[in-house]
Length: 374
Image 1 (tube, rainbow, N blue to C red):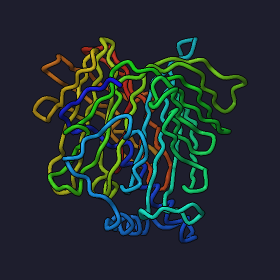
Image 2 (cartoon, one colour):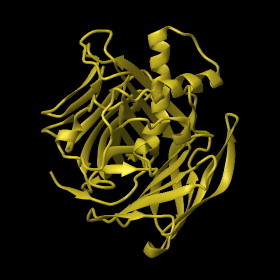
Image 3 (cartoon, rainbow, N blue to C red):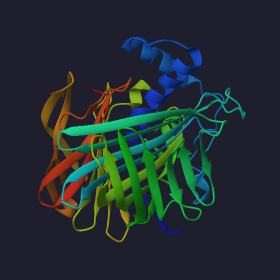
Image 4 (cartoon, rainbow, N blue to C red):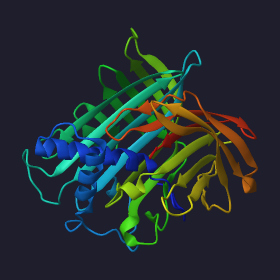
């Protein structure tokens, strides 16, 4: 399998946003509690995640190895796959697609029963202009509802799956089927798999407690069918996706949930990701990655780039930045990213904003944005 290594701090916002919800779901499921108040949500989840004694520590001397690390890592507390894409149908109509599958462990016991400590959550969303359809699945490990098969590659939760023909997911197919949305999308590499940071090890803060492992696929060609509620037949679509996987511990605490993340697929073949990590008592941190059409990636620091919010929108009672000015002078990038639909606030237990963005300025591009902590 071909892949590149890069020295960067790659955004983990997608999994961080939704993993907090997974913890809350676990708490509600395991205790039988009813709906909680917002403040109680945070206290219970913080307590849940602070218990680190069962898990293997994330260390820099353990490189990511593929295809072995496509598998789940039950000795770590949490793990997630993420997929975001912009696609078009045969009439040129644009759709944003988001899919993720996460694993959360309460401890590292091995069990084959309803007492299994692993919990799985998957979410899917499709948006078109000012409409959005979404659904989710929740499953417990140990009873066949969710899992991983090494060869041929298969990652699944109920009837949702990511399948490969050999020991990796590319080429492969992403499948979901719900009353709201369905996907049947073929996947093929356009850029090699990247190992961020130090051979797949990355830390957001100097302490080892805020570290994780992972890999990215900056560009994946997508082609297949989508179906949304109310349509009589499926739509044939094609486009480009970004896919990533992360695993580690202690990465969904309150202090780690304030992120602004954008990815851009530029017409010249480059991929750009930019991130703003908002800290409560310190200045925000900025970082990103740019990947050439040939698949070589370079880390961007806050000295290399700027991302400035230029328009805020109130959606469902939350004020969020829905337009950004992005500059990377070394690559002559100077454009504005604007949400296709500003009202893309997802009403989960810990809500967040996500959706496609339009781009105007120095380059033709399409993008996707996720905002958390507002």
